[in-house]
Image 1: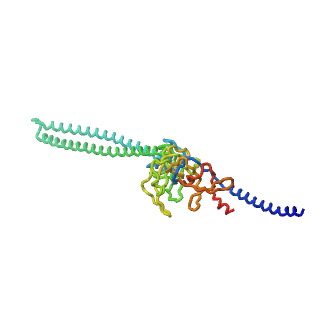
Image 2 (image 1 turned 180 degrees about the vertical axis):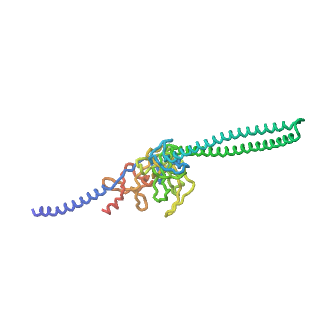
Image 3 (image 1 turned 120 degrees about the vertical axis):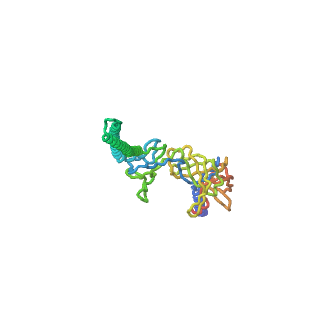
Length: 410
C-alpha cells in the first residue's frame, strides 16, 4: 500500500514535468505557425526595372489673352473638366468694347459726313471756277475782236481796245491760276478728310475684331487647366478666376491633348544599358492603384541629367505612350513604370521578403507541419517585390519572417 502511494507521489511530478514540456512544445508550434507565409508561385517571371515619374501630355494647346486692352475675365469653364473642341473656355467683359464701338461708329459717321460735305463743296467751287473761267475767255475774245482793223475806229479807241485785250489776258491767267489753286486745295482737303474717314473706319474694324476676341474657344478636346495669376506679384498665386484683370498676351491656361498622354520617368545610370526603345512596360498610377496599363517604351533621352541633391544622382529620361488612356487619367499624376528587361518562363517566384542569407548563401524557410525547415536556393532574377529562384517546388509555403529571429524575440 505504501509502495503504491510512493509510486503515485513520484508519478505526479513526472506527469507535471511532462505536461510542461508538452505545453512548451505546443506554444512553440503555435508561435511558429503564426508567422506569415506565402506560396511559391510557378509561372512566367518578369525581370523589371522600376522607375518613378509622372503622367504628362505629349501635346497641348496654350490659351493666351488676346491683344485687347483692359481685359477682365467674366466667365471661365470649370477647371479640370473635359471641354469639346470649339466650346467656349474663357469669356471677357465686353461692355467697355461695346461702348467704344458705339463711339467709333459715331466718329466714322461724322467723318463720312464731313467728307461728303467737302466733296459737294468742291464740286460747287469747281463749277463756279469753270464759269468764271469761261467768262474771262469770252471777255478776252470780245476784246480781241475790237482790235480788228477798222477805218472808222479812231486811233485812241483802237489803243484802248489793245489795252483791254491785255487786261483780259491777265484776268484769264489769274482765273486759270485760281482754278488750279482751288483744285489743288480741294484735292489736299479731300485726301486729308479721306484719311480721317479711313482711320475712323479702321478704328471701327479693330473694335469689332476685339469684340470677336472676347471669347476664347477650345482649339482641341481636352481638360482645361488654368495657370496661376502672378500679375500682382504674389508668391502664393492662385489660378485665374472670374473678375481678374489680365494683360494682352498673358498665358491663361492650357488644354492638354488627352490622346497624347505619356509617362515621363527617370532611369538610373546603372540601368540605362539594360533598356531599349520598344521594351514592354507596365504603367502604375498612384491615384489609381487598381489600374495597370500595358504599353511600350517610345523614347529614351540621349542626354544624362545630373541631380543637384545629395548624394548626386545621374539619370536618363524615358517615355512610354499611353495607347488607351483611362478617362480618369490627368496630366501631373504621379506614378511608376515597370520596364520588362527579361522573361523567365516556368520560374518559381517568391516574395522578396521570403529570401534570407545564411553563411553568404540565399536560403528560404519552408513551413511544414507547424515547423520551419531551412532550404538553400539559387537566385535566378530579382525584382523589388519578388525573386525568381530554383531549389524548392511550386506551391511550397515560405516564411516571410526569419523564424530564428522571431523565436529569439519571443
